[in-house]
Picture 1 (cartoon, rainbow, N blue to C red):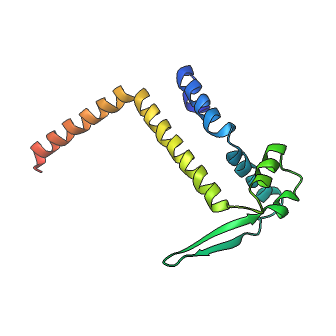
Picture 2 (cartoon, helix red, strand yellow):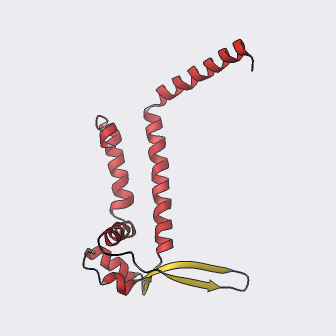
Picture 3 (tube, one colour):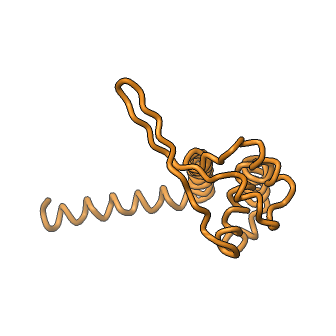
Length: 142
């Protein structure tokens, strides 16, 4: 963002505010950032499967045992608190899914916001494409 939009203070402020409101105060996002560091500098945590069987259903997910995660000294206090608050294990699939949804919605917002910034250019391009296609079809047939 900084590389391409450093001259647009309005967009950069909106972007920074959105990142702060969605991710910086989110303990789950902070945990995932710490988990990335844990995996990079220590080891890949051993996941366990967790199965739930119903009369007409079966659900399988993966968990990370909290006790072994907490042995690492690299967690900050907020991350340690979040891990401990998950009980015996972190439901990693749920954590990643929640984060991915949030990040996907953020990406959609950013795409729309950048498209708005360049709306006049995009509209002009679309008009030129349509005009080119009409002329192409007129000259060469459709």
